[in-house]
Image 1: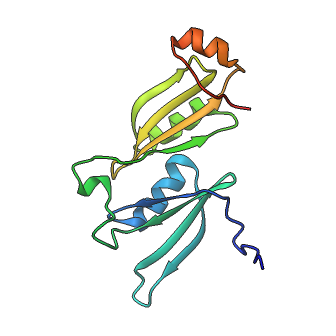
Image 2: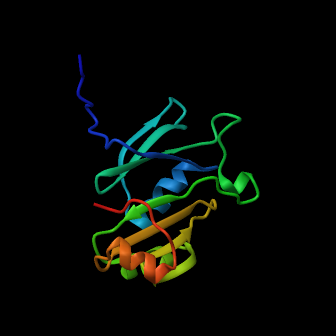
Length: 156
């Protein structure tokens, strides 16, 4: 028997851990345009669980609740993952909004040989976020020539 997800999650999301997850919720709204979809607090007001949406994707924003989860700020700024987000339009304006909110832009908006324009930003805790927008359709063969690479498979 299949039970429908009452929260209508997409099939893939990501968990992002912060030293101060409540501040992260505010920052992610202001800088990147995420929207809170659920915030759960205990009787003392401590954040227990939070979810944010961006388009049809979602992230879980949480604290460093166990020894095996940490904010990059707690591990010398190192990242073991990066969150990738595809924008439909407005990439440069999105970057400007993120910069104005205090994001460290570690890669300025740049056109890529495979037809995307992207930028990378580091949030106050050190997480790296990559935002991308399709600029043009490029065939696998053209991407191989332009990038000097051998590519197996391609977007369909």
